[in-house]
Length: 352
Image 1 (tube, rainbow, N blue to C red):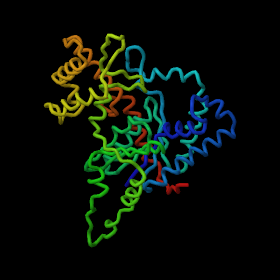
Image 2 (spheres, rainbow, N blue to C red):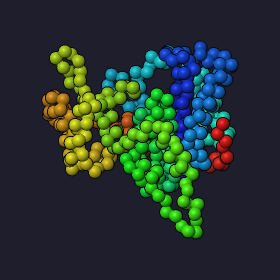
Image 3 (cartoon, one colour):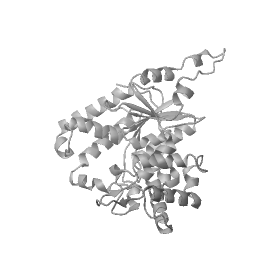
């Protein structure tokens, strides 16, 4: 069974970019009349259907949406999570998000699950839904152009998750290492009493789909570790450490330096350790913070190591999609949402 999880914010923003003619646009002006709103929603529906037609059918269809993120309450010096987007708040986005909510509720009447939870971003829900389906032996394809979602690419004995950016200019499928070999091209066991297993419609559909996309393998832990080191300008999350150069510019961990640190990590005693275990290990925190200070040619002392460790833990909290870093109320809300969604009766959905 393959379930399709749709990043609603990505779909709406992508379509709005085309509909509004790109550039900075005020939704209250672009979508100011009922006629313009109807045209926009038809465009969203058409774009969504075009993507879904390329994918296997028969599983659940989940459409997620953002709420105010719990991450905004995590303290960051000189600002906060996504604080660089404050300027956008001068634009009235009310009609845009109202239309997304209305569209989501309409999808739910058609057999989708519209998933929105207080305190959680759509990213959190995509993590929760994919984790749930994988835990019960089902697979997931996430439709999202947010590269942060690549960390959800995984494959275990129970199920797998892959992420598809269906942007025509960046048509990439992010997959866990060995996914094609271990699932797509792996022969199914066939019983002479059940020849239906000899042909898997899902696999045949996926094989056709793979001809249309570029496949990119992602090592989940390495991907997130690099982001923790370098930060995320898009979400106003700083890197773990900066030093001031003679020209006055502040330099942090570059992607190249992050790769050097990662290479050393993968040769260390923690090469097989999980994030949770490493970040509770004071020996690891001392080792990695010292490495970061030295690679940036800064003073390696106890005070700086403690600051680097604190920043590393902060970025881990902000960037790692995992219930181990989420507040209890978000965990409870997401668990409740999964239970609610699963109880919604399945319907036969005919992709337009």
